[in-house]
Length: 328
Image 1 (cartoon, rainbow, N blue to C red):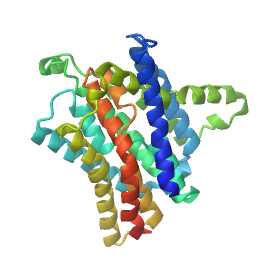
Image 2 (image 1 turned 60 degrees about the vertical axis):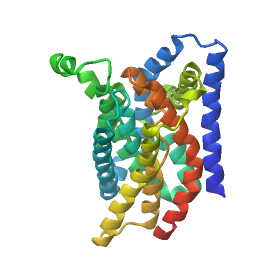
Image 3 (image 1 turned 135 degrees about the vertical axis):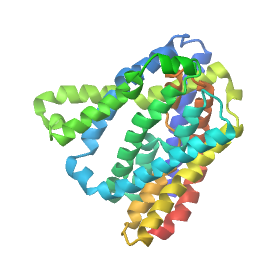
């Protein structure tokens, strides 16, 4: 009951923030440029700050080393997820502008805002190291391959233009990824940035700026819904398949790899297996509409899959918990 209550509370919080953006936009309090302003603020400032400070606060080099064996399952599932998603894009002929979002839905999840509180409610503090393991996988995947695919799926840019304009390093190194890479350097060099007393004002500033990411992303979703109308929430073919990828294929892949590992003689603690499977099924990234906006992609589709996956997660959690109980 605690897990179900936590998932419902998390979803209601998200819905409430989306409603705020929706209502204020409908009332005309947000002008046409406000959404673009939010997008720029998040992508260029808030997200890099959030990722940088989150990595330093939640991880240490020792933790990374101790969790390295489990990272194999996470990255293995991510690679398989990308392959399956690309195959389905080709088979289903998903149109340009939706492909990046479609692929990301199969692989990358909303681990922090929903995944972390739910994980604590389900498994307690003992499972936090395993959550951090999936957090690393999800962060690396999102801001390397995931973000690059979103930028690549720009329907306004023709193939000839993509090949003739040369390589765009900004697409390979988006600001959020730079924030993650800088944080990794700090970890590897064991720079005690967040523990230096006289730098606490910088840490606090980064923390405050980083905390803008989730609420502003959700308000942005509300703005998009207001512009598109609630009719934009629908279950078309691409949405249904993306939701199957998020709630069925993603957790099934990591569960399959864990079972293969156990069959091969590699011991996987039950708590680790449960954590990885639950996290793999978390809703779509709240920042997908932001990434879609940056890539001139189908923002309404991105908004639709994020909104529907978030609401449906309330139903998915109890089902998944029943399925993973045997791994304890």
